[in-house]
Image 1 (spheres, rainbow over the protein chains, first blue to last red):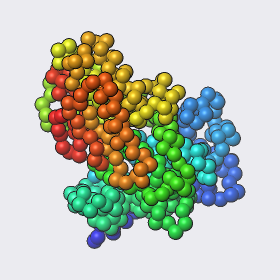
Image 2: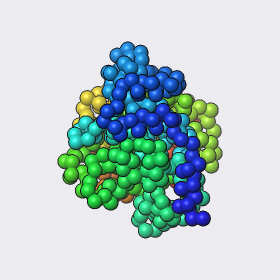
Image 3: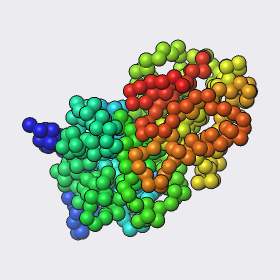
Image 4: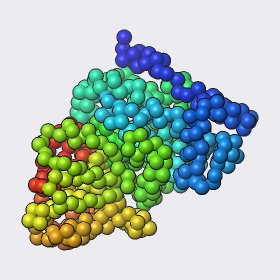
Length: 285
Length: 178
């Protein structure tokens, strides 16, 4: 059995993300979604309901609005924002674990994912063109494939490492060369299986290679830039380090300046702190 | 202050260290100490720069972890969080050490970090520019860099042992005293 087959098999073996998220994700793909339906789905899960209410009242999500019910949260924050909150709550337990193949200690993939989500949202606000909530969720999930692929990366680390060192391939290119798939592709397959909206699946699939798309998709570009910026800031580089490449001329497409990017970086830390307080299991952010 | 909790990095250290307290220096943070037994540690320096200063006579040391080169990128932020930027962070560290009795003539300065992603089309170059500004500020103040571990594509962890002034850098499984 090739690594590719083994990895495919472990995707199937992975427990589904909270059924609540899958159910809402399916609804998000439809234009005629009713508030009542979403309220019902979420309130079925008391843990998630409590988490969502706590986050909805946090400074990052508007703060001090006294949101006391899921219904109020949807009315005040909108269904898309609520989906962000549901994904945050559901995904925490999956990506706060140690990710051994990449040498990420407990909580570090979580910090990195939150950073990329927050920076993606800031980039979307800055650039326009895309829905900030979509890129927030895509940013949060962009590296979820690492959870699946990590143990295979661990087995073949020396090979991947040497290949990237010798040939100048980025880490995920070397990963694909050795394992047959990379963490981006695995992540997108996982999200597909969980019925996530196609824009989010695409952003995860191409977050290291937006140039491979025939036609550029701004959501993909934004998550890509946010990922690079987060690694530069030192939030989440593991054993793979900073061995990744910024896609050519992507900055010119959006008239991104160095100053704007540094400004986004300097403001992202506060937001991470605000959001991080709700997930203190690993000493907080 | 944003900081990552990676105590295990310290446990894996192979260089013997005699410490009873570790003080974590977050991103855009600075810490100083004159207590023997303290170790200052900062995790995950990507393109960020860690600057350590130590006065062996006064036996005081400190470390700053700056994310961006110049405070003009965000002057408002620089007021509330001066250690975020190299040009405001290094003077903060210097003044804090002087208040603890350090003098400029005795300062031993070590620098780590400033890594880059493999290719960035010249867009960020944050590591390289952080390093340039560190050199410029120290040079203007007649302070030499006594040791450094900078550049490349790996992230680094940096420690300062307050008892000895030893500065250790951990990167991709390797450990170096600089």
